Image: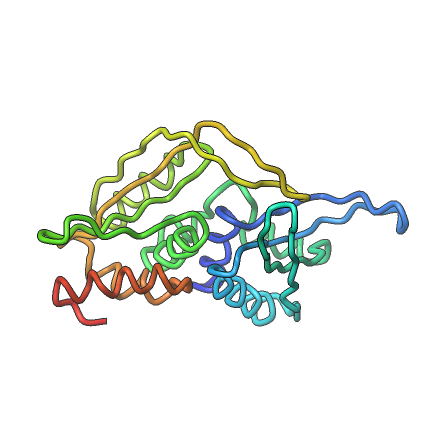
Length: 223
């Protein structure tokens, strides 16, 4: 139970998938982990690759896939986790809930939040003259527990907007559309030091890091 695994769970709760596959050739059920992203999110996949090796002893190659029907290139990690299920259960790794060791610990939650931002978040600087930095996390459902934990650990409010979204989900991927929710909060004087010291260092995706760095510079907060 450390910041690496907290980040891993954040990515699992946003971009990654746990699924069950009926392996008829071997006559057994396989539990699998899969993370599939576009090129911009490749640093996140590399970080998860490192975590799987260091924390769980899984040495995996990042695979490349071109989906011509969508005109896009993807990178993915995939592995069977049958033998890891006892460890996952002990640590509290699943797709649905935030373990207590994360929700009750400030640093662990910051690492988890970085994983969620890398997976389903975006960082936007608004109003150049009087800059505001908004962090927004998009999900197909209302994340009330996340809202409570951001308010608790970041010391700021978080509001939820209902929006119409389109995305790809599932294995194999399929396009879905419908209403989802955006969970928004601002980087402000109340939380900028905590975000700079404990959330930002765990964020892997370059354009999200760059947006935070630019805002820190605007506010004269050195990285």
